[in-house]
Amino acid sequence: MHPYIGRFAPSPTGPLHFGSLVAALGSYLQARAHQGRWLLRIEDIDPPREAPGATSAILKTLEAYGFEWDGAVTYQSQRHALYEEALSQLRDKNRLYTCNCSRKMIVAVTPDQPQRYPGTCRNRNLLRTQSMALRLRTEDASLSFNDPVQGAIAHNIYREDGDFILFRRDGFYAYVLAVSVDDMQQGITEVVRGNDLLGATARQIYLIQQLDGTAPGYAHLPVACNAAGEKLSKQTGAIPLPLTQPVRQLCQALSFLGHAPPPELNQAGLDEFWNWAIRNWQLKRVPEKAISTASLSV
Ligand code: GLU
View 1 (cartoon, helix red, strand yellow):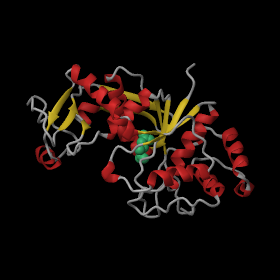
View 2 (cartoon, protein in one colour):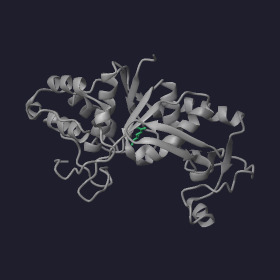
View 3 (cartoon, rainbow, N blue to C red):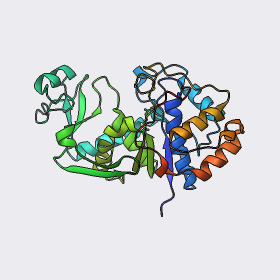
View 4 (cartoon, rainbow, N blue to C red):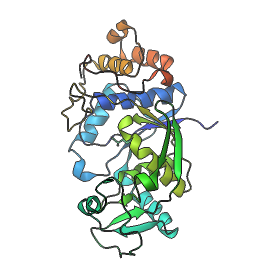
């Protein structure tokens, strides 16, 4: 049996909110309940979306909530050499090509399937200059995986996404490249994260396979929404997690994940909360979809 290695990988786009706490808590408990390691990776791969001070606010909040990560925090901004290496591995296998299509051009070609890249540049052999993306040449094959929370998922990347971007036209690595290389390189055995990322999972598994790696398992947790049904995020005005009374928030997040912490745990200290939570955690209790967060003070 391989030892369990999990991770939490926030993007420093703003402070953590209740939705981030759900992902951190689910991944942490799943790792600790398996006597595994839990790594913390700051996904600072997209500077235009990052907020000044967000990384230190995230670390401070995780500490205040009693999360204990194993080893040093890793930063994607310091791992560009690994992403470059992956690109060159794919280039050697003739799996990469240069593309200068804009979003507008793609939508104009296939308005009925705007999310799929129609392959316009696939055989154009464009030379790579600035403002060019790099795409992965995909194959018409079905990929399936079993998510312990969401069930069996089947996906055909070529038909549903087309050749996808690994390096963006604006000069940044694509999230799918960085996250796949990191999960592979860090030996992550299971990714536990929000359901909003389920759509990216097949591409990650596929990319890891093309890089001759072993993909982790994936479990997608329900996503917390506000009263208007929007996913909690910086864009939808989610309230930053307070640094006081972390146990109250943790108990709410645990209830959101289908567990029933005793009411007196709300008044307990962090140690008592974590003891109870690790002892009682069961992924099979986690609901597939979110229960309403209207009753939660988020
Ligand atoms: N960095 C991503 C986010 O904060 C999460 C990536 C992941 O967990 O795979 O939304």
